[in-house]
Image 1 (cartoon, one colour):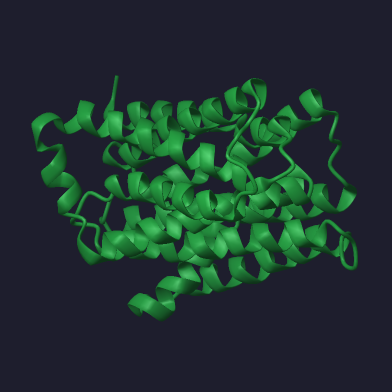
Image 2: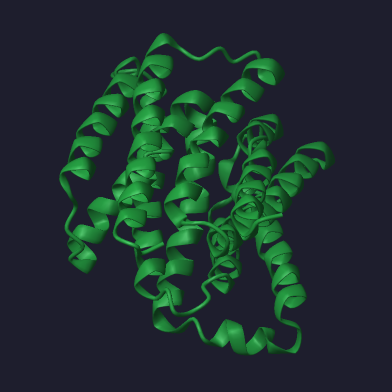
Length: 289
Protein backbone atom coordinates (compact mmCIF):
# COMPACT_ATOMS: atom_id res chain seq x y z
CA UNK A 1 0.00 0.00 0.00
CA UNK A 2 1.39 3.41 -0.99
CA UNK A 3 1.81 6.20 1.57
CA UNK A 4 -0.70 8.34 -0.33
CA UNK A 5 -3.35 5.61 -0.32
CA UNK A 6 -2.73 5.09 3.39
CA UNK A 7 -3.39 8.80 3.98
CA UNK A 8 -6.64 8.65 1.99
CA UNK A 9 -7.86 5.59 3.90
CA UNK A 10 -7.00 7.17 7.28
CA UNK A 11 -8.88 10.37 6.37
CA UNK A 12 -11.94 8.59 4.97
CA UNK A 13 -12.13 6.31 8.02
CA UNK A 14 -11.81 9.35 10.32
CA UNK A 15 -14.65 11.08 8.47
CA UNK A 16 -16.87 7.99 8.78
CA UNK A 17 -16.10 7.71 12.51
CA UNK A 18 -16.88 11.41 13.04
CA UNK A 19 -20.13 11.46 11.05
CA UNK A 20 -22.56 10.28 13.79
CA UNK A 21 -21.23 12.85 16.30
CA UNK A 22 -23.92 15.53 15.86
CA UNK A 23 -26.73 12.95 15.85
CA UNK A 24 -25.45 11.50 19.15
CA UNK A 25 -25.54 14.98 20.71
CA UNK A 26 -29.14 15.44 19.54
CA UNK A 27 -30.12 11.98 20.84
CA UNK A 28 -28.78 12.88 24.30
CA UNK A 29 -31.53 15.53 24.44
CA UNK A 30 -30.55 17.16 27.75
CA UNK A 31 -32.39 20.27 28.93
CA UNK A 32 -29.12 21.94 29.92
CA UNK A 33 -26.52 22.10 27.16
CA UNK A 34 -23.78 22.74 29.72
CA UNK A 35 -24.35 19.25 31.14
CA UNK A 36 -23.65 17.78 27.71
CA UNK A 37 -20.56 19.97 27.34
CA UNK A 38 -19.22 18.66 30.68
CA UNK A 39 -19.50 14.98 29.79
CA UNK A 40 -18.30 15.51 26.21
CA UNK A 41 -15.26 17.53 27.35
CA UNK A 42 -14.38 15.07 30.11
CA UNK A 43 -14.64 12.03 27.82
CA UNK A 44 -12.66 13.75 25.08
CA UNK A 45 -9.84 14.67 27.49
CA UNK A 46 -9.62 11.13 28.91
CA UNK A 47 -9.60 9.38 25.52
CA UNK A 48 -7.02 11.74 23.97
CA UNK A 49 -4.84 11.25 27.07
CA UNK A 50 -4.95 7.49 26.51
CA UNK A 51 -4.05 7.99 22.82
CA UNK A 52 -1.12 10.22 23.82
CA UNK A 53 0.21 7.58 26.23
CA UNK A 54 -0.08 4.92 23.50
CA UNK A 55 1.77 7.16 21.03
CA UNK A 56 4.51 8.53 23.28
CA UNK A 57 4.77 6.25 26.32
CA UNK A 58 7.21 7.59 28.88
CA UNK A 59 7.66 10.80 26.84
CA UNK A 60 4.00 11.82 27.26
CA UNK A 61 4.64 14.36 30.04
CA UNK A 62 7.47 15.95 28.04
CA UNK A 63 5.28 16.18 24.92
CA UNK A 64 2.52 17.84 26.96
CA UNK A 65 4.91 20.41 28.46
CA UNK A 66 6.29 21.29 25.02
CA UNK A 67 3.07 22.98 23.83
CA UNK A 68 4.08 26.27 25.52
CA UNK A 69 1.97 29.41 25.72
CA UNK A 70 0.65 29.01 22.19
CA UNK A 71 -0.65 25.57 23.05
CA UNK A 72 -2.42 26.93 26.12
CA UNK A 73 -4.29 29.43 23.94
CA UNK A 74 -5.21 26.65 21.49
CA UNK A 75 -6.51 24.55 24.39
CA UNK A 76 -8.61 27.42 25.76
CA UNK A 77 -10.13 28.11 22.34
CA UNK A 78 -10.79 24.39 21.82
CA UNK A 79 -12.66 24.27 25.13
CA UNK A 80 -14.89 27.18 24.14
CA UNK A 81 -15.38 25.61 20.70
CA UNK A 82 -16.67 22.42 22.34
CA UNK A 83 -19.43 24.44 24.01
CA UNK A 84 -20.42 26.49 20.95
CA UNK A 85 -20.62 23.33 18.83
CA UNK A 86 -22.99 21.62 21.28
CA UNK A 87 -25.19 24.73 21.48
CA UNK A 88 -25.30 25.01 17.69
CA UNK A 89 -26.51 21.40 17.33
CA UNK A 90 -29.11 21.95 20.07
CA UNK A 91 -30.53 25.16 18.61
CA UNK A 92 -30.66 24.68 14.85
CA UNK A 93 -30.92 21.88 12.33
CA UNK A 94 -27.93 19.55 12.01
CA UNK A 95 -27.74 20.40 8.30
CA UNK A 96 -27.53 24.15 8.97
CA UNK A 97 -24.96 23.74 11.76
CA UNK A 98 -22.64 21.44 9.84
CA UNK A 99 -22.77 23.38 6.57
CA UNK A 100 -21.89 26.61 8.39
CA UNK A 101 -19.12 24.95 10.43
CA UNK A 102 -17.69 23.30 7.31
CA UNK A 103 -16.66 26.79 6.12
CA UNK A 104 -13.84 26.77 8.68
CA UNK A 105 -11.08 26.19 6.04
CA UNK A 106 -11.96 29.48 4.35
CA UNK A 107 -12.15 31.28 7.70
CA UNK A 108 -8.71 29.85 8.51
CA UNK A 109 -7.41 31.61 5.38
CA UNK A 110 -8.93 34.91 6.57
CA UNK A 111 -7.52 34.59 10.11
CA UNK A 112 -4.10 33.53 8.75
CA UNK A 113 -4.06 36.63 6.58
CA UNK A 114 -4.49 38.88 9.62
CA UNK A 115 -2.47 36.89 12.18
CA UNK A 116 0.36 35.45 10.08
CA UNK A 117 0.44 37.79 7.10
CA UNK A 118 -0.31 34.91 4.71
CA UNK A 119 -1.87 36.73 1.78
CA UNK A 120 -4.71 34.92 0.05
CA UNK A 121 -4.68 34.49 -3.72
CA UNK A 122 -7.48 35.19 -6.19
CA UNK A 123 -8.80 31.61 -5.91
CA UNK A 124 -9.10 31.94 -2.13
CA UNK A 125 -10.82 35.34 -2.36
CA UNK A 126 -13.28 33.91 -4.90
CA UNK A 127 -13.91 30.94 -2.61
CA UNK A 128 -14.50 33.28 0.34
CA UNK A 129 -17.19 35.16 -1.58
CA UNK A 130 -18.92 31.94 -2.70
CA UNK A 131 -18.75 30.42 0.78
CA UNK A 132 -20.27 33.49 2.41
CA UNK A 133 -23.03 33.47 -0.21
CA UNK A 134 -23.65 29.84 0.74
CA UNK A 135 -23.75 30.73 4.45
CA UNK A 136 -26.24 33.53 3.74
CA UNK A 137 -28.50 31.14 1.82
CA UNK A 138 -28.38 28.59 4.67
CA UNK A 139 -29.07 31.16 7.39
CA UNK A 140 -31.61 33.26 5.48
CA UNK A 141 -34.39 30.77 6.16
CA UNK A 142 -33.95 31.36 9.91
CA UNK A 143 -33.70 35.18 10.00
CA UNK A 144 -36.04 36.28 12.77
CA UNK A 145 -36.65 32.69 13.90
CA UNK A 146 -35.62 30.76 17.00
CA UNK A 147 -33.09 28.68 15.03
CA UNK A 148 -31.02 31.77 14.22
CA UNK A 149 -29.23 31.45 17.59
CA UNK A 150 -28.07 27.97 16.61
CA UNK A 151 -26.83 29.25 13.23
CA UNK A 152 -24.89 32.02 15.00
CA UNK A 153 -23.35 29.48 17.41
CA UNK A 154 -22.29 27.43 14.37
CA UNK A 155 -20.73 30.51 12.75
CA UNK A 156 -18.91 31.31 16.01
CA UNK A 157 -17.67 27.70 16.11
CA UNK A 158 -16.26 28.06 12.60
CA UNK A 159 -14.49 31.33 13.51
CA UNK A 160 -12.98 29.83 16.67
CA UNK A 161 -11.76 26.87 14.61
CA UNK A 162 -10.17 29.41 12.28
CA UNK A 163 -8.16 30.91 15.15
CA UNK A 164 -7.36 27.47 16.61
CA UNK A 165 -5.98 26.00 13.39
CA UNK A 166 -4.10 29.20 12.55
CA UNK A 167 -2.31 29.05 15.91
CA UNK A 168 -1.61 25.35 15.31
CA UNK A 169 -0.08 26.31 11.96
CA UNK A 170 1.98 29.05 13.61
CA UNK A 171 3.47 26.55 16.06
CA UNK A 172 3.58 23.65 13.59
CA UNK A 173 7.03 22.53 14.76
CA UNK A 174 5.44 21.45 18.06
CA UNK A 175 2.99 18.55 18.45
CA UNK A 176 -0.28 20.16 19.52
CA UNK A 177 -2.24 16.96 20.18
CA UNK A 178 -2.01 17.59 23.97
CA UNK A 179 -4.01 20.79 23.45
CA UNK A 180 -7.01 18.56 22.78
CA UNK A 181 -6.69 17.25 26.33
CA UNK A 182 -6.52 20.81 27.64
CA UNK A 183 -9.52 21.75 25.52
CA UNK A 184 -11.57 18.92 26.98
CA UNK A 185 -10.55 19.88 30.53
CA UNK A 186 -11.38 23.56 29.91
CA UNK A 187 -14.81 22.62 28.54
CA UNK A 188 -15.50 20.41 31.55
CA UNK A 189 -14.37 23.06 34.05
CA UNK A 190 -16.41 25.88 32.48
CA UNK A 191 -19.53 23.71 32.26
CA UNK A 192 -19.07 22.50 35.87
CA UNK A 193 -19.70 26.10 36.97
CA UNK A 194 -22.38 26.90 34.37
CA UNK A 195 -24.49 23.71 34.41
CA UNK A 196 -27.63 23.49 36.51
CA UNK A 197 -26.65 19.88 37.25
CA UNK A 198 -23.90 17.52 36.13
CA UNK A 199 -26.23 14.54 36.45
CA UNK A 200 -27.12 12.93 33.15
CA UNK A 201 -29.35 9.86 32.89
CA UNK A 202 -27.54 6.67 31.82
CA UNK A 203 -28.82 6.58 28.22
CA UNK A 204 -28.04 10.23 27.32
CA UNK A 205 -24.70 9.89 29.11
CA UNK A 206 -23.90 6.85 26.95
CA UNK A 207 -24.61 8.86 23.79
CA UNK A 208 -22.31 11.67 24.91
CA UNK A 209 -19.51 9.33 26.03
CA UNK A 210 -19.65 7.56 22.64
CA UNK A 211 -19.61 10.99 20.97
CA UNK A 212 -16.51 12.02 22.92
CA UNK A 213 -14.71 8.77 22.07
CA UNK A 214 -15.51 9.07 18.35
CA UNK A 215 -14.39 12.71 18.36
CA UNK A 216 -11.05 11.88 20.02
CA UNK A 217 -10.29 8.95 17.71
CA UNK A 218 -11.35 10.78 14.54
CA UNK A 219 -9.38 13.97 15.24
CA UNK A 220 -6.29 11.97 16.21
CA UNK A 221 -6.49 10.23 12.83
CA UNK A 222 -7.02 13.54 11.01
CA UNK A 223 -3.86 14.90 12.67
CA UNK A 224 -1.92 11.83 11.50
CA UNK A 225 -3.24 11.83 7.89
CA UNK A 226 -1.12 14.79 6.61
CA UNK A 227 2.00 12.70 7.30
CA UNK A 228 1.04 10.59 4.29
CA UNK A 229 -0.64 13.09 1.96
CA UNK A 230 -0.87 16.88 1.46
CA UNK A 231 -3.03 18.68 4.02
CA UNK A 232 -5.05 20.28 1.20
CA UNK A 233 -6.04 16.80 0.01
CA UNK A 234 -7.19 15.97 3.52
CA UNK A 235 -9.33 19.11 3.22
CA UNK A 236 -10.86 17.78 0.00
CA UNK A 237 -12.18 14.72 1.83
CA UNK A 238 -13.41 16.47 5.01
CA UNK A 239 -16.66 17.92 3.50
CA UNK A 240 -17.77 14.30 3.13
CA UNK A 241 -18.39 14.33 6.90
CA UNK A 242 -21.00 17.07 6.50
CA UNK A 243 -22.82 15.09 3.80
CA UNK A 244 -22.75 11.80 5.75
CA UNK A 245 -23.87 13.48 9.00
CA UNK A 246 -26.86 15.12 7.25
CA UNK A 247 -27.84 11.77 5.74
CA UNK A 248 -27.55 10.05 9.15
CA UNK A 249 -29.69 12.79 10.75
CA UNK A 250 -32.25 12.30 7.98
CA UNK A 251 -32.53 8.53 8.57
CA UNK A 252 -32.11 8.43 12.37
CA UNK A 253 -33.96 11.61 13.41
CA UNK A 254 -36.17 12.17 10.38
CA UNK A 255 -34.63 15.65 10.08
CA UNK A 256 -35.07 16.58 6.43
CA UNK A 257 -32.74 19.41 5.31
CA UNK A 258 -34.49 22.60 4.24
CA UNK A 259 -34.19 23.79 0.65
CA UNK A 260 -31.97 26.64 1.89
CA UNK A 261 -29.63 24.14 3.59
CA UNK A 262 -29.45 21.98 0.46
CA UNK A 263 -28.77 24.89 -1.93
CA UNK A 264 -26.38 26.73 0.41
CA UNK A 265 -24.70 23.47 1.40
CA UNK A 266 -24.13 22.57 -2.24
CA UNK A 267 -22.50 25.96 -2.88
CA UNK A 268 -20.27 25.65 0.22
CA UNK A 269 -19.18 22.03 -0.22
CA UNK A 270 -18.46 22.29 -3.95
CA UNK A 271 -16.49 25.51 -3.35
CA UNK A 272 -14.44 23.91 -0.55
CA UNK A 273 -13.71 20.84 -2.68
CA UNK A 274 -12.47 22.82 -5.68
CA UNK A 275 -10.49 25.21 -3.47
CA UNK A 276 -8.72 22.26 -1.83
CA UNK A 277 -8.16 20.65 -5.26
CA UNK A 278 -6.68 23.88 -6.63
CA UNK A 279 -4.44 24.31 -3.56
CA UNK A 280 -3.10 20.78 -4.00
CA UNK A 281 -2.52 21.33 -7.74
CA UNK A 282 -0.69 24.62 -7.06
CA UNK A 283 1.47 23.07 -4.37
CA UNK A 284 2.49 20.21 -6.66
CA UNK A 285 3.21 22.64 -9.48
CA UNK A 286 5.53 24.58 -7.17
CA UNK A 287 7.09 21.33 -5.90
CA UNK A 288 6.18 21.97 -2.24
CA UNK A 289 4.38 18.67 -1.64
